Each structure stands twice: as C-alpha cells, then as structure tokens.
Amino acid sequence: MASTGLLGFNPYQKGVNIDISSKPAAMAVQLIQHEAAKKEALDKYYKDYENTLNSAGMRNQDQDVFLNKLGEAKQYYLQNRDKILNPAKYGADAQAQYNSLLRGTQSTISQSKQLAASDKVDAEHFYQARQQGLDVPDGYIDAVERAHLPMNHPRFQALDPYQYNFTKPFDEAAFTRNLTAGLTPSENKQYTPSKDLGYQDVKTTFAFDKDAKDVVRHKGEIAYQTIPGVTNMTNKVIANGQVGNFQNQFTELYPGQDINNAKPAQIAAAIGLSLTPHGKTISSREADNSFAMFKKKADYSHELALQSIAANKAAQTSPAGPMANLFDAIGSGGALIAKDKRIENGLVTQNGQPYDGNIFIRKEDMPANVYNALGAAGVEKKLLNHEGFNAIVKNGRVQSISDPGIGTFDRQAMADAQLKWNTEPPKGRQPGFVEPSGDGGYSPTIEKGIAAFMQANKVNRATAIKLLGDRIPKK
Image (cartoon, rainbow, N blue to C red; front, side, top):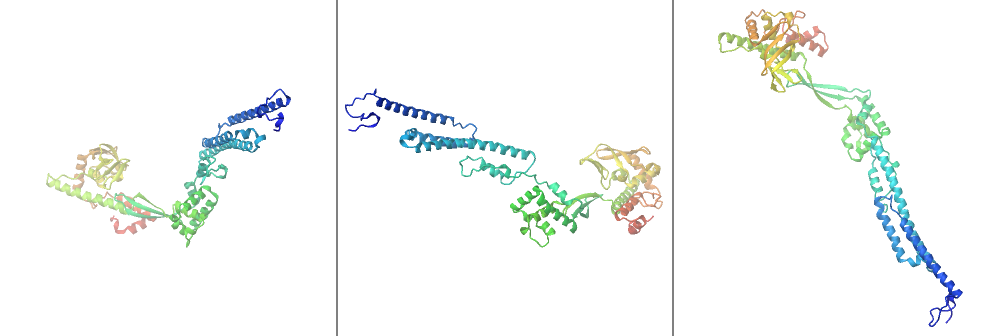
C-alpha cells in the first residue's frame, strides 16, 4: 500500500508501529497541534465576540430583533462549527456566512441606538413646540407611531421631525380683529314693551355694507395665504366636509357661486365673515324714558289718587272703611332701589322676600300725591327740592319716611296729610299731578316726559309740545 501524507506510510495499516520521534512524524504532530490551537483560538474569538454584542442603549422594542439575530448566528455556528473553524479544509463560505450574521447583529445594535437618540430629539422637538403653544401638524402623530414600531416591522419608518411644521394655533379673536379693523357695522334696533314697567326689550341686528364686506373678503383671502393658523383651520373645515355651513356668508361675498367649488382662500373669507358681528342679533333691555312711559306712570299715580280720595270720603261716612295710605303706592311702576332690593306698590322685597330695615327711596320713585299731601300738611315746596327720602321698612311695608328738611312722617302722619289734602278745594288742579313747576307750567313728571321726547326725536321744546298735542294736559 502506498505511503500517505507527511509520514510516508499509512499509519492505519495493520501491524505498523509509528515512531513519532522521526522528523516527519514530529512535524505532522506539530501541524495537527497547530491546527487544533488555531481552531481553539478562533472558537474563543467568536465566543468572546458574541459576548461583546451588548444590547445596552437599544430601544426596548428592538430587543427581540437583536435576540433573534444573535440566536440565528449562534445556531448557525453550532451547526457549522467545524466548517467555520477549518476554512482551509471546508472552504471559507461557512465562515463568511457566520461573520455576516455577526455583523448583522452588530448593525442591529448600532441602528437601534441611533433610533433611540433620534427618538430623544423628536421628543425634545415636540415638547418645545407644545411649550410654545404651537399646533401639532396633521400626520405627525401617525409618523411618531410608525417610528416607535420595532425596526423590523413592515410599517416601521424613521421620523424626521423637521419635515413637519409646528404652527401657531388658530386665534379666532385675532382673526376677527384683523378682518374688522376700521369697520363699524350698522345697527337696526327693534323695541318691544317689556313686562316690567319702565323698561323695553331691544333686539339689535348688526350688518356690514357692501364696501365693508369687500374688505372682509380681501383680508380673509390674504389671511389664508399668510397666517398658518387660518390656513390649518380652513383646511380642517374642508377635510371634515363642513364648508356647507358657511354657504350664506359665501354667497354674500361671492354672489352666484357655490362654496363647494370655491378655492380654500375664499372659504377662509366666508368663515371669517361668520365670525364678525355681521348678521348677528343680540337682545338687551333698556330703561323706557319715552314720554309715553312717563305718561303711563303719571296716569297710574292719578288713578291711585282718585282711589285715595274715594277711600277718604268713605272713611268720613263709614268708620269701617279705612283710607288707602300713599306709602302703599310707592314704586307703583316697579323700581330697583338697590342691587338686591326692589319696591313695587309699596312692597319692598330683597331677593323676592319681604324686607325689614332701612332704605333710600329716590324722588322719582315717589307718587306725585305724596308731595301733594306733604304740601297740604304745611311742608314748603323749597324743602322738597331733594334727592329722595330715607325710609324705615317692616315686613316689606314702608312705616315712615324722613328728610332733614321736613322731619319724619309715619303712616299716621301721612294719613292725616292725605285727609287734609283730600278735603281741600281742588283749586283747578287735576288729581294725581303736583302743582306747576313754574318754569314751563307743567308738572315735573310731564316735564320729564317732554324732555325724553325731545331727546329721542332730536327736536326742540316747542316742536315737542306741538307734536305731543292733546297727550299733554292743558296748563
């Protein structure tokens, strides 16, 4: 049998004694040992390298990706260890494949660490924008969700925060101020009588003329092109299919056109017009200072006077019929005497309940006949040129009135004054009205009515008296 290898013979031939002391044998042993050492060293290198593959700093969602790649590399090594450690004998393919798997694992670590750093930058960018009060752009939340998926997920996509513009939110007040700067709408007021005497309900409707609406249209279109908040707001309205809500305003700005075919800038202008006072109606309540209201109050007071006279006559003929006290006619039209107090037909209430205590009653809330009775009781007119009376109230009813010039009149004193006044000759005066003031020949109540009529209709006194005609009692 032919010799084989460095030994020059077949070492496995039966009966052959091997002398390892010979040079060829020693060299063969050395080569075997050298190859074994190389394999051991290479095996140790690969194991040490695997141990250096540390996942610290990776994103949590990428840990499974790393472990899967590392496990794949280890499995390949165990299955192909001899080939990997002996490329001279088996070729370099197995070793190259294993090295490729290791590099892939290392690349996963590096890539995940880079993504972790990017996530930190993204978060800082987001929080900075929010602290500045900026709006989150459309699509940003979805982009963040995709970027936080594991790196091997089919939907994973790294986020570039700088491709998204964080803009100031839509400021409705600022947008409206910009549109209406320098514009004043007209006011159309409609008055209706209020259920509360002395007041009238008012409905005020505002409107811009054509020139003003042209200004709003122009500014609205410019705002869409230059103000990101307006742009984003308008785009959201369009995306949500809400443009039809502004068709009326759009028609006023662009007659004959359909908002569904409009440009975004035109839609922004229509939305802007809807935010202005144009077309809006507000309700309010105003004091009714017209002559008719003063006349109504005077007539009411006149009627109370007639009732008082009738009661007085009845009292004189029948002790069982008491005379009505003028204190019970105070505030006949209903009057607010304090923030939470009101007097109406002599009843003083606080938050709807009868009141006990002290109040101040203005002169204009006093029935005219109170002054007539006080005059009959001897009080000089010049002493009654004041703002009103201090009054003591018990169980919601006025018990007395006082003034530094006249002293105090309680209910009995007022009844005595009424009796004296009612039994005096009429002297040509009409019950319910005080004596002429001396300047114009009319009572203070009528004078106030004339003044209110003059102010409301912007006419002089002579014209007011002429227009009012028979509605003013003759002098």
